[in-house]
Length: 309
Image (cartoon, rainbow, N blue to C red; front, side):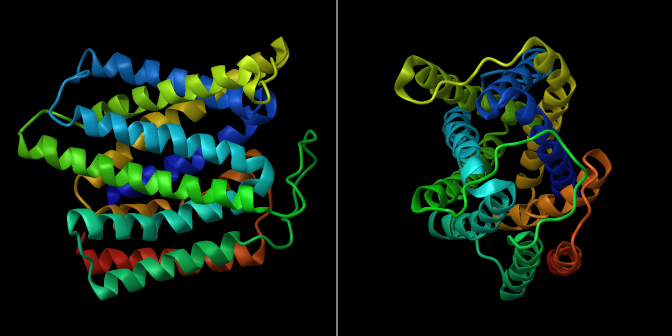
């Protein structure tokens, strides 16, 4: 459970820092820059201490990266201005767990006990209680941001569903690749898997960014020089906490636990955002978010007891 807990905290930090970088650079530019930075950091490790692009599961990791990094993250960034961060996070984190469980059950034959499933349901219920849109929490004045559309339409909900499915399927494929590498006694670790996955995801992200700038979509604007300088520390921290260290811990967790359990723990990341946002952005949590957090943490404790880890 420890690597999944590390991943959860790192994903929460990534979410808060991403909010700052998006505000300064725009969503498409912020996503591309953080992917470039994370890929460079992981490449330095992979081509010195790791295995680079070698390994019997390389193909699985590349496909997983296109789905989990490329399609999933692109859908998330498209859904954010339509659904808002709260509802987008709720859809992705809550829907991805049952999708992952169903995918592993149908494809890999991984089965969980009824008590493990019950604990996962408690976790998801707590997350949903804490994050379901309601009265907005009090925040200190911040620079103006575009507000999400008044109501989520079919396209926005479809984007959230695509992101959830992409996250789940990408995780299952990565775990399958890890099992193949382990069976072949091939040297592989979380950072190496993250590098192979993010390289494929970066290719997709670059293609999407170029496609937009070619005029087939709304081209990303060019941020000003002051905004670029101000965004650099936030973007770097976002790249380190999310696609680099966060995914490395995530892959470490997938190597030792079923995907459904790992994703249930990492689904607590939005709750961990609450104290970080209170510290960095002076957001005050609502009573509902605290109550949901207590329920979700109780589910994690129950799940930990059921798995014996």
